[in-house]
Amino acid sequence: MRNWNALVRERLGELGLKAVQQEEIIAELAGHLEDVFKALQAQGLFESDASARALEEVGDWGVLARMLHRAKREEGNMNQRTKSVWLPGVISLVVASPFLMILEKVGVRPHIWGPSGFGLAIPLPWLIAQPAFGALGAYLSLHAGGDRRARLVAGLFPSLVLFGAFCLVLVMSVFVDWSVLASIRFVGFAIYICFWVVLPGLALLLGALPFLKQQKAAVLAGN
Image (cartoon, rainbow, N blue to C red):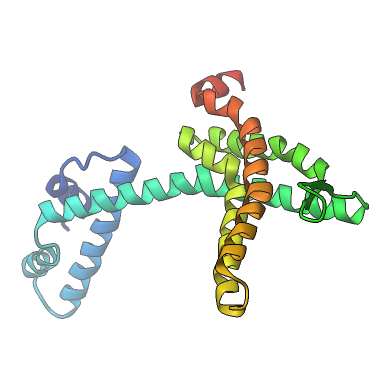
């Protein structure tokens, strides 16, 4: 019986991946070839013919090796992005959002920012708490191995999500109500962005800053 794992390992050579990843690829491809081989034998082919036909399934081993390397590298990048950006950012957002609702339920009155009659009501305790949420996102990203950019995005995630929501509302308002002048619409949008995205974003950044300067190795050494 042919040793498919050894054959695949020899044909693929070094893929430039981690040993675990390379062994996973070899085992997966060897298993596929063995299944094809057994199916061909079941159709009545001799072992040598079934083996040759199974190898024909692969085609160009060099092209296959490059495709597998690229696929695994992209998969690894995606997994790392999820662990160091999306998951920490979502956790920070999930913690920050209920806090605003809790303030409303306990009767905390929003602070009025801006001139009388045109100001925006923002709960001051919510704004003061933003550095803690920014620190949480950046800290989780740091422990997940995120680089500085990943930590920054994770720390600012609540404001980035809010910015996206405001942009969506702006686009929808254009189609819903054409009576409002574009200039007034965009001025209002800019004001809301300033008070609900920029100010909280700066507070989030303040909390994230200490973790943007650290290296993961230093944090692990302290554990």
